Image 1 (cartoon, rainbow, N blue to C red):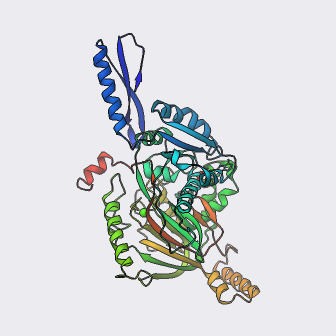
Image 2 (image 1 turned 90 degrees about the vertical axis):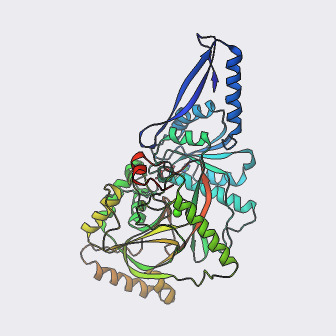
Image 3 (image 1 turned 135 degrees about the vertical axis):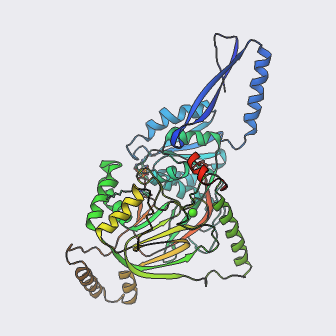
Length: 472
Ligand SMILES: Nc1ncnc2c1ncn2[C@@H]1O[C@H](COP(=O)(O)OP(=O)(O)OP(=O)(O)O)[C@@H](O)[C@H]1O
Ligand SMILES: CCCCCCCCCCCCC/C=C/[C@@H](O)[C@H](CO)NC(C)=O
Ligand SMILES: [Ca+2]
């Protein structure tokens, strides 16, 4: 609210949020005036009191800006579009423009977090991942939890993170707000929205590697990312360029995938029930998971023995999506019915197939509305954890004494399987929320609602509500 000197004697202006098309929000203003000063003051006091009752709204936030993400406009976006809204909403800020990669992550280990009501991250998925690692790591350190020990439950983070999209894909922002738009995201922060989010931990030989909230992808999306890093100068277009090249190279990778299905989960990857604000599936699944964990703690169920499913094969892509992974390039996402806060991920296995078939699958998950899983070479499972071991790793483990032989044997296998393309690529890399992982043999486990964002999930559109009137 703001006092204004106007031609009328007494007036005040109320700024409010207006919903526009496609989940975009804008800030609008309406000015009230009257000739009675006392009445005007009463109104103003009543509104101020109401605002003060909204204790979930942040008052002081810590802002990290990556000046090099996306089109390198992070600083400009923040100064022109976000800072004026924060000041209008009386949110005070401390701003750190990062000077090197991992600056924000390292800073989060040192800073006095008690001073802040939230953290704001201006950048893309990579920058968000930095902040995520800094915050989760810091909370574990403060609560004496060893994040490197896969058996210890992690402490949840109550400090919310807001994402101002200024990257190339901005998948986490898009999938939690419904649009990549800095003003909309700033308004969600100002209103103090809260969206819990699942976080996956990734280990190599039981040693902690990374956290992930969106895509953990091997094969196609690993190769797209690896190729794109060489062409960072192309900005966001580097993904399309690398995507095209990766598609032409048509590699597949051999290995073994084992996973634990999320038996308690309500919903399945092909039920077409998308995660929306106040999602019923997330609420029910997280409740069931809590019950299951209590039973496990009492020793009624032994999760270590619980049935693992194992699939050996040749894969074009292995994608674990902890959320839909919707983004402007894939508006429904890699797994449209995956949920933000249900404690599960959708594991998508795309087995070796022809180029044409792979293209059909790609087109379905990037542009068309048809079911991308409706192919005989694609399988999808809702899981709580999974492991992947590439074929050569299994062999290396078995014959670790004779490395020369393994090299020859693997090269021979690739050449006979792939006579025409002459490829010699044994392994892909993992794409972990847009960062590459060095290790290929990994284990992933989902932690239900480990962090919270300043968001509310994607709001149901009128069309969706008409289709699913009784959902929420
Ligand atoms: N000052 C800096 N100099 C160099 N790199 C930085 C700096 N600050 C952050 N980074 C790193 O830049 C990387 C990419 O940033 P960001 O995610 O913002 O953009 P992007 O990669 O273009 O977008 P997306 O991840 O959405 O595809 C991150 O991994 C982050 O760690
Ligand atoms: C035949 C051409 C195909 C082009 C494919 C282009 C890429 C499509 C992008 C969909 C990605 C959705 C998953 C999001 C992943 C993000 O975590 C990550 C980092 O921002 N982005 C990418 C592209 O890996
Ligand atoms: Ca999930």
